[in-house]
Image (cartoon, rainbow, N blue to C red):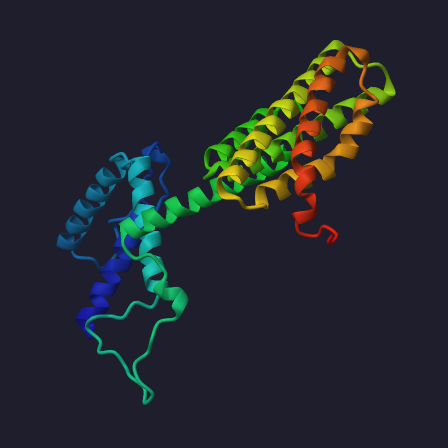
Length: 298
């Protein structure tokens, strides 16, 4: 017991002397008056040992502190976070046997089973999350581009998505239906471009955009008519004729109203679009009574 008290006393004396030691950059005469190694009742051997330890502490204090590399710090932080996640996941200690209740072994929840464990699965999960976020962002931009008009920043993306959809189509009937959808979109764009001229006359750039839109209506509707007519001739199904009839009935009135508003400089392309509608009507009219929803006739 006495030995323990003596060791404790020496430790406290050393700690006090270490605190009273001259800090780096301070002059010796500025040191507090209490000397670290002059405690009364201390043997000379103990004072010498304490002096050597104080000198060693002073030399260690003058050594520059190590600087941790930022990359190493990042890696160690990631390892600590992973260790904390493993601890939070209540991973069982292999040295302690698993406790079992009367109803059977403890089973992990379904969400805990889906938690990635290895570096590979964590990387795949992170990559999947990144792809999901990117796909969501691209889907939002693609949806926003659906209302773009010629000259807008997203109009090129809109046409690119249409080309992708057309390239993924299967047979001729599918491609013909997509061409009719594109013709409907171009007709709507021409109508909206014409509405811009209500506040004043259309400039040359606007007229050029309307001409290109109507030219695309003529091309896309003509291609759709050709492909759907060929699909009807080959298969005999009335579904292609039904698509042509729906397109003509849905957009003929819109086209008639828009055609009456066009300036004389666009009459040539206007006649081309009207010819496509007339050709579709000529093929649909003999078969209209056979289409679903048509009035029954003897």
